[in-house]
Image (cartoon, rainbow, N blue to C red; front, top):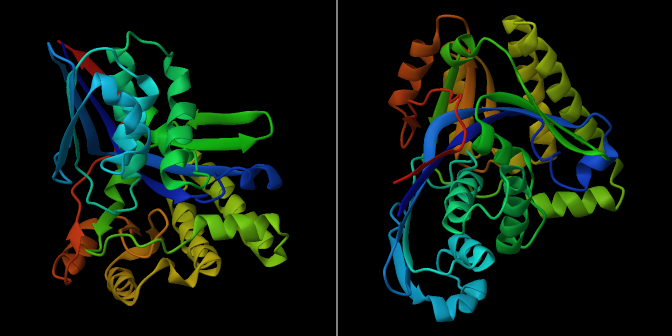
Length: 335
């Protein structure tokens, strides 16, 4: 049996970091807004006639073997730690080759690990006979990733990977709810440039330190998160109303909130790239993920996307990513 899955990565537009539990419980109306892009994480599982398990990451260039009778050792295996912990969690009863590849650049801030997580869960769940319904995939993904990174992890990235499209994710004491945003995706795509800076992400925001400061009652931090929450709520309204001028204004005002959260969200090289884009038709910049490297999404003036791309194309180490909004989330094929 061959099982093949894929899931899209994402660009986060507003509300990032507030999706980490328990932070969203302290900000009524906490939300994030993001959209999926067709830079895919893919997983392929091929069953074997023996008890050998082969785990391989093509883009990372790492491969190793174990066996069914040693599957318990994967709990603490440092090589391909996410894959190892997922296999340990599902505990398949047949040998298999598992191969993964991620199309997003390493450390891009496009939720590559969360996307791979969902793709692997879809494949492994099929391998063990659909043990879990799809509504369990996201809690499993978040819990296993927490075991890997050893601190609480945000939730928004799993939703874009599993469902695709543009969405607002709403967080409240009663749970997490995904709202698919019925918006003009073509216009959003035509006005957005996604740039890989050439610098792998280096945790511009230390989520665990921020979480501890917030719980300890840092008033300034609380107010910053209130602003981040409001940016996401306002952006949702502007997108649903096709008010593209207001979208630009909200994204422009949101950037200082992220910088207040951590001045290290941008590097000097990123600041230069942002200045270049703003001088050539970009209205606003959104650092993707935790920042400190990775990708920047630029929202452009109408009709000036190509001009922004051209201005960035010659910058040292930078790469304009030719990605499109993905309306499809997790896909699965069995042969």
